[in-house]
Length: 175
Image 1 (cartoon, rainbow, N blue to C red):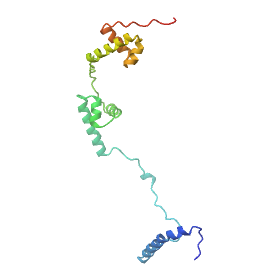
Image 2: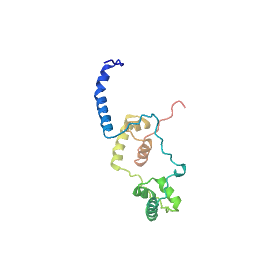
Image 3: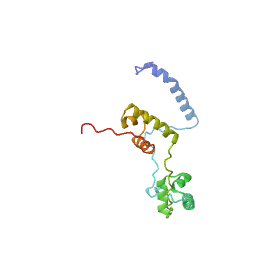
Image 4: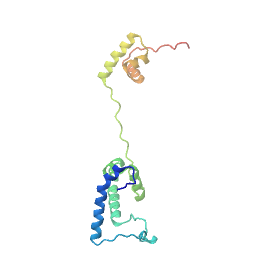
């Protein structure tokens, strides 16, 4: 047998698949099947351009789903905040605003919840006051004290004012 290919091992490797395909073709022909050998492609059925329509989203199922959601949002708008409605409905704030604009839903403006003032931890302050006094005894500047204690300059100023600590500012050098 003469082979045209240089890669004989590939031909021998694929021979089993080729024999299996030949057996399937023989079985198809034995069952009365015919193989088209004309070489011409089969004509595709034409789709009429008039039948191509964009999908409609106004089907009754979609309409009723949206109407039910709008009704739920109307009921919740009287008592809940917009953020709570978004969480409950599983929609974003932008979608909620779009629905509210389309269907005329108004959300009442509620007074802002006052935030509690920052609480002062007296135990922490007492600990910091002791450490600030150690910094004064070491003779370091206010800024170096802030860096050493890892606190803000505003906190240091508050401690100095609240607890009456005498921590002088350094005089400006070369001015």
